[in-house]
Image (cartoon, rainbow, N blue to C red; front, side):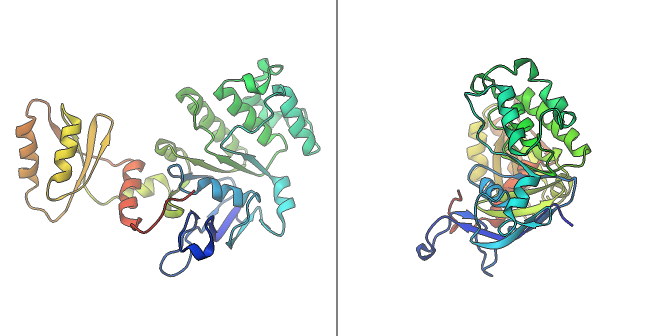
Length: 325
C-alpha cells in the first residue's frame, strides 16, 4: 500500500464555462489531468516548482482541506473525500504560512495541539526531542515574537506531536536564512529514519537533491517524476557555461545568435544550449571571444535540477496555458 496515491487530480478555480484554466491538473489534449503519482512508505518526496505552480492546491487536496473537481486520492489507504476524518488523525500538516497562535507561548501552542489529538507533550517527546530542544529555552516566549527559524521549528513540532504516519510540509523553508534551511533538512532526514513518510514542496531547486524522488511542477502540471539523479541524466543536450566581464551584454548577444536554443543567467555565468545540428559552434564562440577576449571562458558543465526544469518548461509549456494559482 502506498502512503500517498493520487490519480488524475484536477482543480480549476475559474468557472467551467470560461474556457480558461487556473489551478491544478490542467487538461492536455486527451482531456486527462497528469497529476498522478504515488509515494512509498518512509519516502521523502519533493514537489518542486515556482510560486503559482499548484503546489499548495495539491497539498490542500491531499490534506482534505479542499475538494478536487475530479480525480481521486488516498492517504495511508484512506480516501480523501469519504474518509477524511481518518486521514486527519494520521497526518501532520505544516502550511506555507505560519499558522500557529501568535499570542500563545511556545509551550502553550504545543500543549494545545497535543490536546487536540488526545495526547501530551510527554507521551511523544522522543519524536520531537531533537527539534523541540532547540526552542525549549524559549518555551515561555510568545510565538509571534520568535524568529523565522524558531517559528519553523515550533510549527514542525506541532505537526509531529501526535505521531503522524505521513507529514505534509508546504514550502517549509521559504523566508528563512540559509543556516535554518540546512538545519531543517537535517531534521527531515532524521524523521525519515523513523519511518515517517514526508511530502515536501519547495520553490528552491537546490533542495531537490535532498529528496528520494521529486516531481517538477509548472502551471498546474507535472513535467516529470524521477530521482534527482535520474532527472539530470535525462538532460541529453550539451550544456555550456559562458563567463565574461559583461554578463548582461553577453546574454543579449547570445540570445540573438542563430543556433542558440537557450541562454539563461546563473550567477556570474550563462548556461547555454545549442542546436545539435549547427556546424558553426566554434565560429559562434570565436565571435564572442573576439568581443570579450580578456575574460571570456567557455566550458561544458553538468546540468543542475534548475537547468533540467528550464529545459522541460520549454518543451511542455504551450503558449495557451494560463498561470496557475
